[in-house]
Image (cartoon, rainbow, N blue to C red; front, side, top):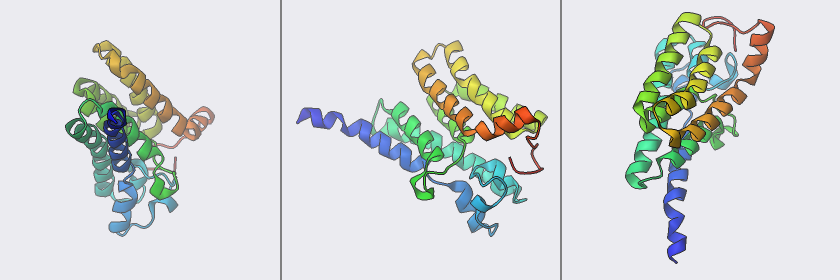
Amino acid sequence: MATDYLWAAPAGALLLGYLLGSIPFGVILTWAGGAGDLRTIGSGNIGATNVLRTGRKGLAAATLLLDAGKGAAAVLLAEWLFPGHGVVAAAAAFLGHLYPVWLGFKGGKGVATMMGIILALHWPCGVVYAVIWLGLLATLRISSVAGMLAAISAPMSAAFFGRFDLVLLLLALALLVLWKHRDNIDRLISGTEPRIGRNPG
């Protein structure tokens, strides 16, 4: 019987993380704000960059903050309810955002959610991530490049700060971010990747 209870905490953290991560804030906010179905706008992605294509900067900012917030909340709540299982919730929240059951497993690319997760797991790594992502976003204005480079920086900054316990998790999340950006990578290679404020990407 005791063995059965060993699965309760990780299973609880997994479920909590996935359910929080799968909340499609971009879709909800654009619908509630009267901007239509986000999945039929621009690239069809559910993240903040595509919300920006509706012309509603406030909704885009709210989507970014909420997508990051749900990642952080998953980790912090899991550590409170299921101590020691924040990493499980982190992975589940990220997968929930990328593959939400409510949207037929067609979700976002995970950049904002990954930032929230990292801030909750180890805030110095999260600060590095945020500076790289938002800094490149402001200067290059190519969302995909900024997001991918920020994701790639995460396992490296974890190693730099001596958080080797997080390196494998962050490496896995970074690889998933790259996978979700594969169409963007093709456009970058062909020179057709748009900048923020222009065509879908």
